[in-house]
Every structure is written in structure tokens, then in C-alpha cells.
Image 1 (tube, one colour):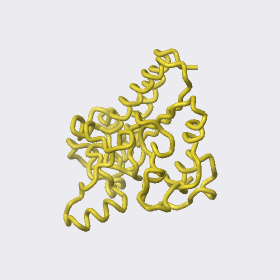
Image 2 (cartoon, rainbow, N blue to C red):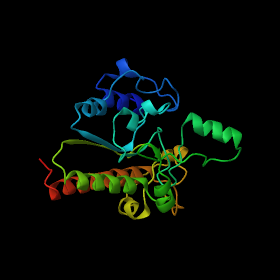
Image 3 (cartoon, rainbow, N blue to C red):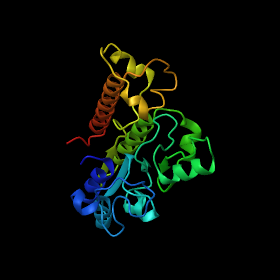
Amino acid sequence: YKTCTPSRSSLQSGRLPVHVTEQLKVPDDPTSAIPYNMTTISEVLAADGVYTSHIVGKWDAGMATFRHTPVGRGFSNESLTYFSHKNDFFTHDTLQSGCKTRCETENPGSHDCIIDMWDGSGPAVEIENARGGEFVEDIFLGRALDILEEEGESDNPFLMFYSSHIAHCPLQVPEDRLEPFLNMGDDESLCSAQTASINPDYSSDFQCRATYSAMVSALDSNVGSLVDRLKETGQYE
């Protein structure tokens, strides 16, 4: 689908966007994303009593009540997610939500009101205290690898829903992963409208195609790491 919320709501619910939602609303709107009374794949698997379902990464399928959240929809407390449409990859601040708008209205001049990172059913306080400012995809990958390691010790079936933030705006990537792509010529800076900085240490002109390419390369590397872990634990079939 043309926008993220309908696409993710469709995938989670097994229904076409026209039957779930075709609107891109702020995630804390009670009518945003998957309607309250619709089931999701994780809920169906949880009802079976055998499967454990995990999600790591972007949710964007509702958060107005606990029932709308990943854990409320049947995903495990080992899940690590963010709820919004888009976040800063390094500060983990939400960049688009009703909560952010209200926060900035009440705190003029502030643009870092809400860190959007959730560990199971609660705020990821320990992770943010230890790893705040780190490229979020590295944090997500670490959790996904840990889950695959744990599931490798069990004979029960499971679902791992790896939901990368890449390559959604803002276009951001660590310096070391951007460098191999900086030789791309005739680049553009159009992404600067929604990108505060490519990374905390980057001070040059925006190079959006190079940044996008580096992000996709990072995603490819992460998927490769997950496949390797599945092979190492005898789960790759």
C-alpha cells in the first residue's frame, strides 16, 4: 500500500487495507490502524497455546489502548518495538504523533519530548539508559538475535516478526556504514526536509541517495545475521 500504517495493519490482520484502514492517522488516535475488534496473526497463534510470537522493530498498527499494542495483540514480553510512524534512528524520539504535538505545544521550543521505545508492555527505560543515542537498528538486531538463541533451545514453534525501521524516513545511518557510498555522484538533498542529521557526527551536505543505499545495505547485513543465527541454532529450514 502507499503508506505504512495501512500496509502494516493489513499484514498483521490478514486483511486488505480497504477492510482495515486506508488512513495514515497519528498512532495514538483510537481509530488509527487495526480496529479494536479485529484479530491479528499473533492473537490467532497465541490462542493455539503452542506458538510464541515475537516482534522486533516498528509496530505502527495502533497504540491508543493496551489492546492495540503488540503485547495486547498477542506478541511476547520479549518483544522490542516502537509505536509511531517514524522516529529518529539515534535519539529514538518520535517524529510524528499526537503525543508529540501535545508535548511540543505544552513545552514550546522542545523537539525531543517523547522517546518511543517499548520493551514488552512497558517503556524501555533500561535500554535507553544504557544505549540511548545508539543506532536503533543495532538495538533491534541484538534483541532479535537473543530471541532466536532462546527459541533454539525450545522444541515449540514460534513466530519472529522482524520489522525494520529501514528505509523509512528520516534517512539516517552511522558514519562507518555511510562512507562506502559517498562516491555516488549527482546526489540530492531532498531528504533534508525530514532528516535532522544523517548521524550525530555528520556535518556535510545531505547525500540522500548515498544514505538510502547505506541504509538498505545495513538492513541486508542484519537479515544476513538473523539467517546465520537460525543456521547456528539448527532452526534454518
